[in-house]
Length: 150
Image (cartoon, rainbow, N blue to C red; front, top):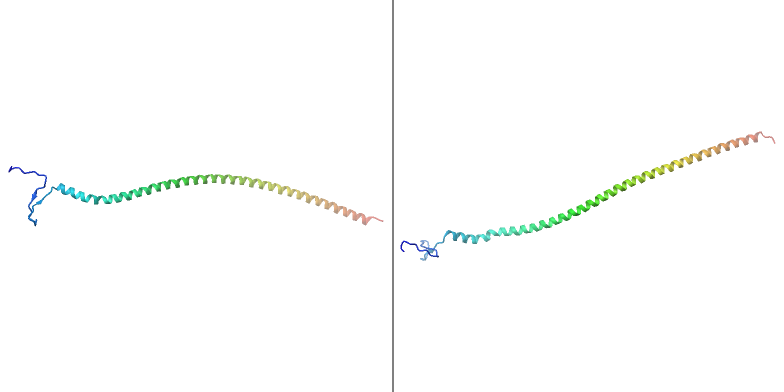
């Protein structure tokens, strides 16, 4: 048994000259040190991840709300565009109808004015004719009166 090294589950004892008490110190394999370091450091390392995850979740919720609001605004814009198109079409129709009615009314007014002017001219000529006849009758009467003997 002198040539065999005893394997035990506990770490081997190391005699250290830095040890103030005369108790031998135990050494552990590097994997144990790494595991303990990871166990202590991992929660600290994951804190930013969890904070970022919480922030990302809040941003995702905000993005969903913005997406819904954007879709609602698009729908409203589609409705407003449709209403504007129908109103533009209706205004175009009204403008055409108004132009037609204005033209018709203008033509009727011109016809009435022409008819009234023709009536006025006819009346003026009739008056002129009557005045000439009266003038001629008056002149005839004077002539008769001045040349007649009583």
